[in-house]
Image 1 (cartoon, rainbow, N blue to C red):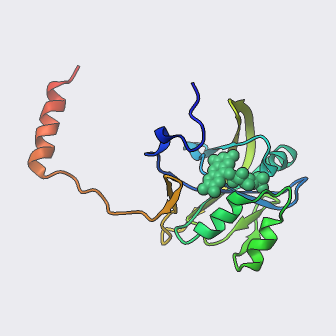
Image 2 (cartoon, rainbow, N blue to C red; image 1 turned 180 degrees about the vertical axis):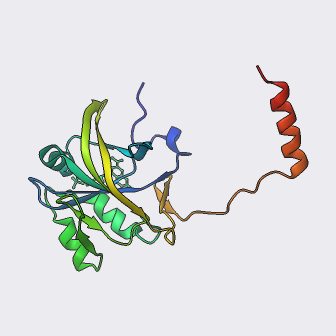
Image 3 (cartoon, rainbow, N blue to C red; image 1 turned 180 degrees about the horizontal axis):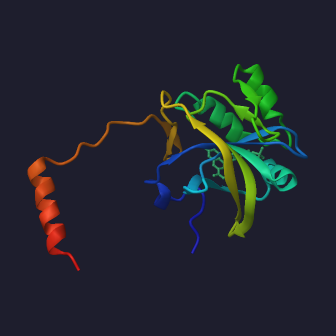
Amino acid sequence: MDIPWGDEKTANFVSHIGLITTDGPHGPDIMACEWTQQISYRPALFAISIGPNKATCDNILATKEFGVHIAAHDQSVLTSIAGGQTGKKIDKVRALTELGYRFRKAQILSVSMLEGVAFWAECVLIDHRTYGDHEMFIGEAKVAEADREKAPLLYHGGKYWHRGEQIQKPPAEELERIATIIQKAKK
Ligand SMILES: Cc1cc2nc3c(=O)[nH]c(=O)nc-3n(C[C@H](O)[C@H](O)[C@H](O)COP(=O)(O)O)c2cc1C
């Protein structure tokens, strides 16, 4: 079956927003990538799933490296620009720099890294496969850092959200009741 973009069945999905920086035949580029996920601890691996016609795809295939960032809550405008224009036609890094966003040189890669993010990692491509209508790139993080002061930007129902209230644990008696039931269900 298919679940196309914007399908109602995805209305309850929540994701952070990856911002992928690359360089290559289309020049320095940044794109928004909701489908960005850590998939291994040791080593730290990241999977990004990208439509085949994106400038980011061509850039990664040419240079075998990309920057992964998790957008901060105050980067929704930047995210819309990175996700609403293609690096085939617009120099988004230049436009974003003129708008006041800051990029810096990567420590290991040749790509630019975005500042002010909740998390970043410099990744070297270790695998690439086509899954359905997207290209999956697996990158191994060589260096990474998080800014714990920054809340991540959330994406839900096609809109941006700020992290809400933490859900509290049930009271002690309820936790005890749950523990007893789990023990009784021991195999
Ligand atoms: C919030 C948001 C999330 C997005 N997530 C993805 C994604 O996971 N995969 C993808 O291929 N495109 C995604 N896009 C669309 C790309 O960012 C968009 O096509 C962009 O223009 C590609 O840039 P490029 O051609 O410079 O690589 C997203 C866009 C937005 C606004």
